Length: 113
Length: 115
Image (spheres, rainbow over the protein chains, first blue to last red):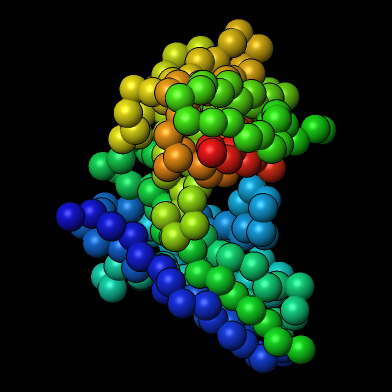
């Protein structure tokens, strides 16, 4: 079956360290993958998009990688800050899904001062 | 430019009632999608509208319906409410509705509680 998985356990990181979140998928032919940030009680906010033919994308302290062989995307936040604490969602767009986004359940990131 | 606006933000209903939620997309955006979010379930896709036509539909019962108006504003309706319908309902718009890489812009959501 097709699924997209993120670590359901909260990730606790010390301030200043790099936080790395994982998004794994199975049985999809991805066209591209997006990452969003969601704060409690708010709608998700778009962060980055990476296409299936791109290995890496950067934006300020954020970096996303996409490995179609491993069927995995990694999302990195360098020099993490308490304000980065939120739930991070990955969403995959597949050729099989009529371009609808298929969402992971999200990983809660907690940055400790 | 104003963001995606959803109304109402909070509402409480009882089982068996119906509810209508409204979404005004960003000006110029013609695609509007609706999602249900519950703790532990992530975002569950309800449907997408583009130019007043439902283009995609998720796996929800017929009690969930929607529509889009000529000004791109959208409404979703849930009839015969059940306790399990309690959730945050999110609306998202995007610029291009042709299924390409456009990012989604979400509203703040409508928090529905069914008693």
